[in-house]
Structure formats: structure tokens, C-alpha cells
Image (cartoon, rainbow, N blue to C red):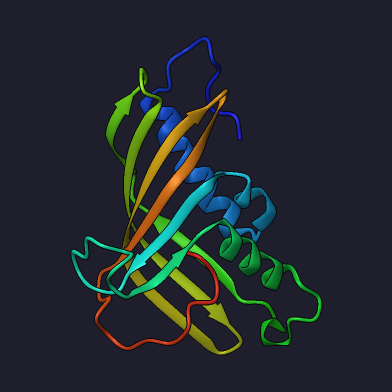
Length: 166
């Protein structure tokens, strides 16, 4: 996804559009396009505890590298994934993202978005209130995800499996 060119600075609107475009990809099930947003060493993190600071030495709901994200996408795209017949669907309702950092000199950006996430399959529907933080970097003419942290408001509650990606 190209949101900037190398001859101009990344703007607040570029960063906000990036988040809206990512959410649309997830809602439309465009998993392969979504994977292209990630750096090869990018990490998807969903902490288990409120205000958790360490994904390595503390248990997380998700701490997925590129291999795990690709495995998840292959499962979601797979024709023989019987647990996904019919397929799960999701819907993100997001607030306008906050742009917390723009550093065009370093090519680093931070965007924080509060949202409601709905995931459904058959008669089951799950609603999560969450905050997503994107640590982005500029790579050539594109923004890429270095880390996405998703904090669920009631992360300490018991809930079912999350099949897709908030």
C-alpha cells in the first residue's frame, strides 16, 4: 500500500488513511493484502494483562511473528479448514485515529485507535472494545507495520477463541 512518495513527508492524513485501509482489508477478508503491510520482522501483540509491558517474559493472548501471521492467513484462506465453514467474519467500528508520533527524518510513526470489534460465525457473535497501537515505518514509498499492539478493554475476562485479527 503506497501512501507516501519518497519526495514528500508522510502526513497525519496518510497515517489515518493507513489505519482505515488496514481495517477495511480485515473486514473484507483480504488477508494476503493485509500481510503485505507488515515488515518481515513485524510483530502482532495482544497482551493478556492490562498495561502489560513485556510480551516476551509475560503471557500474552497473541504474540505472533511473520511466520505465525502467515500460518493464520493460510488457515483462513484454506479450502480444507473445516472449523471455518462457514467462515468467520469481522467488522471494525473505529474512532478517528490519534497520531502520536510523526518522525519523517527517522521514518517512524505511531498511531493509536480506539475501536469496537465484532467477530461472528454462525449464531455466535463476540464484541470487543479495544485500543490498537500501530508502530509504523516508512519503507521506500510505503508505510509498513513494525508492531501492532491490540489491548482489549476487558482482557482479564474469559472469552472464546478469537479467529480473526482485531
